[in-house]
Length: 451
Image 1 (cartoon, rainbow, N blue to C red):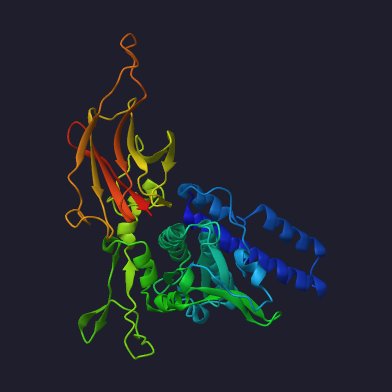
Image 2 (cartoon, rainbow, N blue to C red):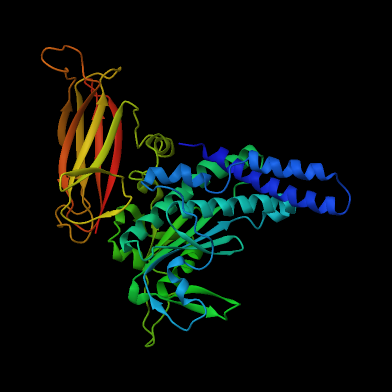
């Protein structure tokens, strides 16, 4: 996987070159510089730093997405027909707010030209991560970005999976790319971070329309879940994502991968299970709109980000061995295709094959012991197995010869476990691999999302 710190530095350099180019053009217009220096500055822009979409090319393939998302800021393309009209349209959306925390203080510490370049680079990084997961950037608001996930050609559940994967990746790049860059540059990074709010509203809960006037307006969405996303962002702690009730309930998001937010009050820990201040309905009854904090460390277990990258972040909870691969495949009408962990929601009753492949032409000590352990979540899962890691299924990988007449060893050996999709929600299959001496070589999870 690309080095996020180097990519972020390239983005910063790109912003700085653009800023320098503008300044040079202004100087030339006043007769202060040779026009040749302006041309050289513009040439350095095209040949030097990484350009728009580059970060997408590093992220999208891991999540099974092809090409790049070139959608511009502003009106969602699926609702262009509403521009300049009084027509409204009910349509679901998953709303995400990202706020850069601690950037205001930078203006007290560093020159404005640097602060602009840095903040712009962070905003550009947020934009590209959002677009990497097919999100649509709706608006920039100072240090915040508002985005919508979903549309006419996207399933509701997949919009949610994209938004959650986006949130996990945002934090990964913050902590493994931007903060190390700041520290290497000697910048004060202790207060810097993100806060993310995310919620889902179904068709009957969200209304799209043209706000303002034809020349002073925008196409946007309104509804409680849309408004709640910004409130959730304001309630999030630094580098955390708050998920709203609409999202949590719609896909039966497991409690294992989220937790109740807490805060210190009067020297004691106070739980915050609902959005505060608590809204009331027309009769004065409290809304009690549930919220939970996304568990970043647990969610990294099933993330489709590279295993070696996650091993570093999880401090060995995920354990990588380059000689071993763990994948999942769907089998539909004899067509076998890879299912990338937690990348999209599958229909119920789809056949799955979990496959472990080990290279045999290497140092591994065979036979290898493979243990598969599944955990089912969701309200439809029977109580006696809900949120409980099941007893492991044990299989062994042996070195196999090419044929009885050919004594050479096949370069790969494989074991498989057959399963199928059933209960709505997110479920996981954990795989552990041990060598013949009992040493653990490998551990990883694949998340399976079911409609």
